[in-house]
Image (cartoon, rainbow, N blue to C red):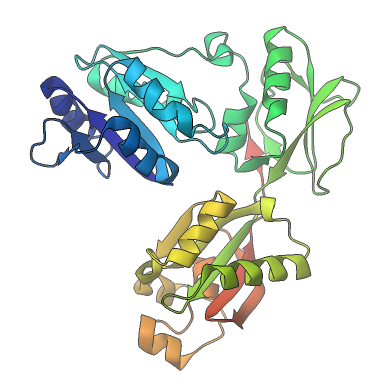
Length: 338
């Protein structure tokens, strides 16, 4: 879910999409007016969008807003799963985030685009328009899992009505409290970041769960996803790790297209990060070596080294093997900032 698609329908739109590729160099461009670096949009837009939406980080339409709305409407699931959707007119005058403005990053991307092409961003989310603390944006930037999406609206509504919202944390959070937040458990509504998951100190409690664990994974080519899923779930249970606390999946770059690992990352809604054999080989530590793994990958261990390559991660579960997969788990002590 890290791909960006830019779709246009006019000659001007195609030219504008090429300009946007300067700030999104890995974006895939499609148009009714193909050119160098632009693919032909052969399917109707509803079918095309249905094909790409679930794998997308963002879909940028250079079109009428109605085209974008009709294309994505049947595909919308929830604000923590949907791709960011942004619309530009083909003259590049306006940039409008339409879907997943906060968690999906559409607002932030729209501002970036508007600054680059000297356009006007049209931001409609209430917390942004009223300069209020957006808890979903803050949670996303600070690697926190939002346990109950409906509480976003509860917290935001109270802040917009100038009510106080409580905030307590078992972890270090640096910086000055945003306006409206208060370190007080006596409030009716509040935000909690706790080591013990599912505590409810407020009548209306928003539980933010720190993402602290990295899964290092090695895989035999073509090994089945169902075996990986069962393996991971078993090891997490044995080590009392909630899957909502998973921060990332990591492996070697030759496994970047391994279907099972990609499916796991997608199910967990976390990034899949890969490292080169040189990066893995250069990391320092005491690892479980395998001559066979080295003959295949160029490095003596993938899963543990991938964990250590992830900045700040310390191995807490050494290499385990099952059904064509190896697994190691690392932990990073969470901290946040306002």
